[in-house]
Length: 530
Image 1: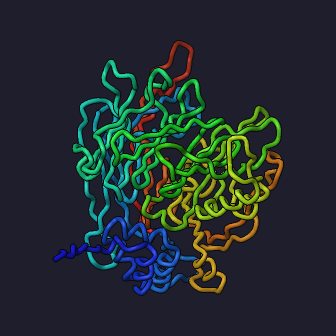
Image 2: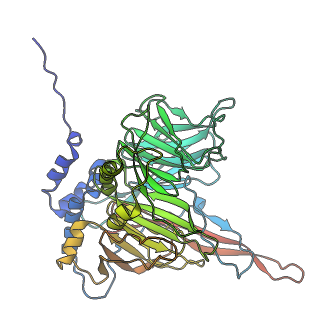
Image 3: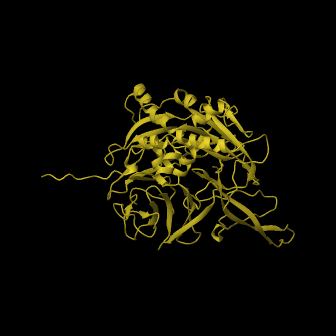
């Protein structure tokens, strides 16, 4: 007699559409509490415009907002993580010299899904912090969980995924190896241990005979499901190399060396990669991985006037992999260079992930199968209708930080002498926009933006920029002084600083006194927006 084997079906095994349908029967308070169950549930809620809308209704119905008065956009939750390793010193040789914002290395400071990771200065040590709710009511009381690990040698933090419990970093390969670096797979919760699902503890990166890298290399990373990728932007002999692994399969990898310089990349789905260069956006399919990556579509960036060119183009796509089953905003940050420019303006383009995926079929109908030699879909055929553009005077790490369908920035321009700035929250959730138009939940410090919000850029571009994607803009009364800004769910993390002392050097013969060091104490400030 045949025995019937019973398979256990768990909640998270259900299709995401069914899970969203189940959660849609909860009220706003229950959905907000469901976010505390686990990472998967929270990120599914955060990436669903319908479920976020129900939380918004709960929030706006529970608080009355009179005419201008006390600012209640930011709650009183604040936690400063003042650590000695955050301290830094900056040389300033004369009082009249402007104080510049310090550069925070990508491999030293990261934030994902509510977890902060940073590499301790001058030590081979990683530290992690995670704010946690400590009560069952709605008072937003939190505690702070802390853990870390000590490594045996110098390393470069590349990225981590709480939903995968995965931590990846680069270490120098052993002497005599044909490659320069190993990519190591560790457990995020126990970073001194190899990830239990990893195909191997480490994999080889680029071969030294084929590629020459800086030391340390300039890399950007992205993790999605079974895939992780590293873009080596500084690889000599080629203009950037993208190496992709199935980290759960031993030794399975693929290198992408496109015809044009590769500036950044991101996984959009478990089958699609977005790549950007100085001319266009490109979509590649992973369906036949590891045998090949297939180019599926190309979209032109807005054309610049002569002699201007895109010096840097970066993708900001910070939503975790499980959230990417739903739509979210992606930003393309483009720094423009030209000899006649008094500054280096930065243009930021907002586009929905689902829009790029749908435009693949538009490209195929127009041009057929994509190839390196096939044309790109002109900006006028996709950018005007599907994007929203913003212009800044220069790159600002505290602007256009995305999570789901919301974006957070420090309002106004970043100056050479940093000053406190209010927070600006832009909500692109179509349900919130429709509700605002109907007159529901309107607050004194909010406005609806539907038409052009960008001043003329005819001085830089040959064609107009996009002004689609309506949004609700909220400006806080409270102001903040920050170096970096990161958003995860309902929390905003601000890397802030205070000047705590100055070290003066004696005057040279006949010369002025000057400041040798400006001592600054950095801290992490966590703000709650629920």
